[in-house]
Amino acid sequence: MTDPIRLDGATPRLDLPLLFAGQAQKEVFVNQALSALDGLVHCAIEGEAAAPPAAPIDGTAWLVATGASGEWAGCDGLLALRQTGQWLFAPPRDGMQVLDRGRRQMLHRVAGTWRAPARPPAPVGGAVIDVEARAAIAALVAALQQWAAFPA
Image (cartoon, rainbow, N blue to C red; front, side):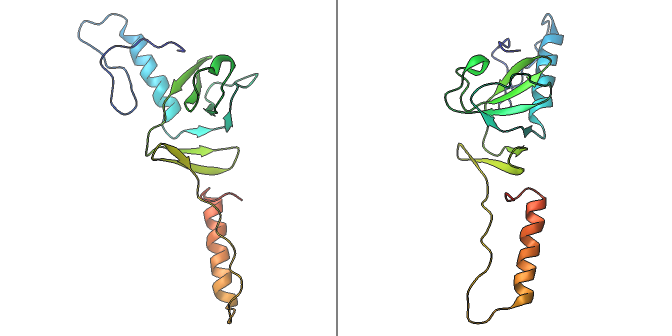
């Protein structure tokens, strides 16, 4: 899967291979598409790294950092999906969301970059301190953290 077979027919968003009438070895293309879907749908990455882990586990995914080396050389910025003992690389697309397990936070792909919302600051100051309002804001921030909207 590190060097997938490419034909002119592929889906526009996920670049999944399309089958053609009379095509030999259709199972290769179907399996390639299923592996890509398995890694990209509800994607959760372990984190960002420039080198592959020493003992990768099938089903894990990583965001390849700049200056990639080893089996990831030349794949800067791609998603590295470990599938059936091999690396499958996929370009991230705007609109993608991934859960970064290392940061315990959702990342969103917008305008060609990964974005993660920052934790809002706690309310401070003011002439009148409303204890109930501050408690409500703190509860909302805690709930958003629990759902991986902000880092802890």
